[in-house]
Image (cartoon, rainbow, N blue to C red; front, side):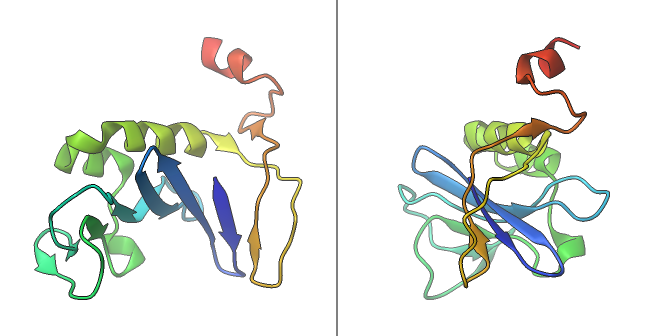
Length: 130
């Protein structure tokens, strides 16, 4: 997972195989999908549900453009069930608070792999078994 921090929000990028998606969690909210990419798709890029976006690669699906217009994971799962593996990966990543041992860069991006569950448990299996 790659995380980009700004003063206003934290953006996440999740990949599952060739698929990827950018998403964010608004304060106190549920994950909202900004866009996804399926590089193996032959369908032209669109802004959901059917507005073409010239100049972007095939398989790009954008949502929004305003944050209140972005779908939740449950909505995209209903609209695009063929990408359920990607939605499952995002759901799993969104269930934990990412406490990162960060390597900050001037760009504002950081990469890390240390995770703590949202309820403070140090072992992910404890959270799953509750």
